[in-house]
Every structure is written in structure tokens, then in C-alpha cells.
Length: 153
Image (cartoon, rainbow, N blue to C red):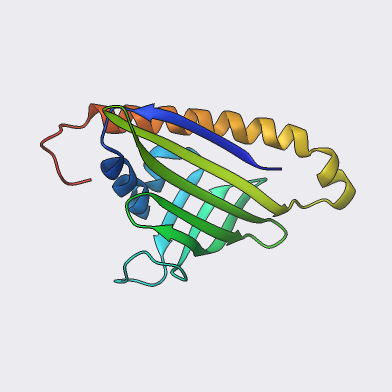
């Protein structure tokens, strides 16, 4: 199962990605995130950089993650491990028209629950899709309401 959603944002793609790339923003636009931070403080985002996140995902869980792909200004992907829940996630921003297209995706390696977990996969996919749509609407509202002269993301 892979779930991917995107939205057009009337802001330059570089600005959209800069917002994604700053983990301090995660709880602002993602409703399920309680905490998000880099473990490797002071480093630039790059493949291998480690972070952690506390979020609601089949209960409140803490995830350790590592950057698995990084294209500066465009895309970042993570492998997150929350014990029985291991997922690959990513976000990207690509130029489109006068703004940018923001995308987020999730692909679990495994869902907890064995056979039951596999049976509920379609339900989980619908829930994640709905959550991503709402998160992206929140991201759009935040970024489009910012003063263009404000360069502090």
C-alpha cells in the first residue's frame, strides 16, 4: 500500500520545501504530530541524518527516523520505526505554474496485527489519505497567508 496526496500552493516551491525541511514546523501543519526534532543537531539535512517524532499513529507512538533520500530544495524521504510499525514517508515540492505542488506520501513496510493488519489495510489507506488531504490544506493555508516579505519560515 502506498498513499500519496498533493496540493497546489501559491508559493514558490523552494519556500514550500523550506517549510517541510524545518522539523519545528511539523506540528503546525500535521495534525497528528506532537513532537518532531532532529537528533543530529546542527547538521544539514542529508541522507543518514536522524530524527524523532511523537505522533498519533494507531495510538501515540514515538518514531525514530533516518533520512533515506534527499534532493535539496525539492524532496526528503524518511524511514521511520515505531516498533511494530515501520514506514517510509516523504514530502516534496515541485514548481508548478506561479507556485508549487506539495506532495506527501507514506508506504508502510509492515502494519501491526499480522493477518488482521493486512485485512484493515484498505481502511488504513483511506484514513491516511483523508489525514494527508487535511494536513495539506492546513499547509496551504499557513503558507499562502504568510507575508511574502517575511523570509523567516
